[in-house]
Image (cartoon, rainbow, N blue to C red; front, side):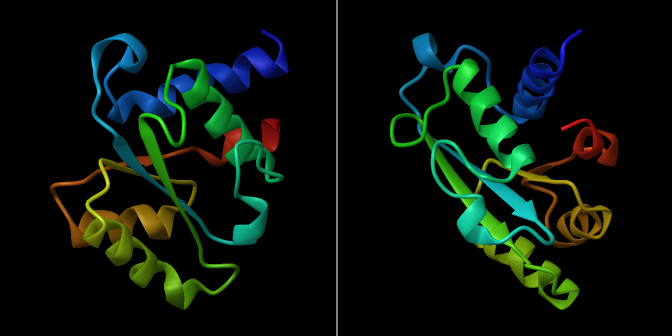
Length: 132
C-alpha cells in the first residue's frame, strides 16, 4: 500500500465517528474537534493544512464527502506545546457540542474521557504520525 493510500485509509478510519455517505444521505452539518498538542494553529488551518497529519485528516474527510463549509465544521485547537492547556481545549470542544473529538495525544484522550461521556473521542496512534 502506498503512503497516500495509507493516509487516506487512516483518514477514512478517523471518520468512524461520523456516518458514511454524507454526500448523498444527509443535510446535517457535522462538527468535528481536531485537537493537537504542539502544532501551531495557523499551520492546521484551511482546506490544505501545512501540518501533514491535519492535511491527511482533512483530505480523508473530503474523500468521504465531508467538506468544510458544506456539511462539516472543523474545530481546530492546539495547546501549542503547553500541556496545561489540554484540559481547557477538550472542555471547549465539549462546550461547542462537537460530534467527535480527534487527537493524537494520550493525555488529551484521557481528558476527553474524564470530561464527557456524550462526545465520541478518537485517539490516533503515534505510528500514524511517523508514517507521514
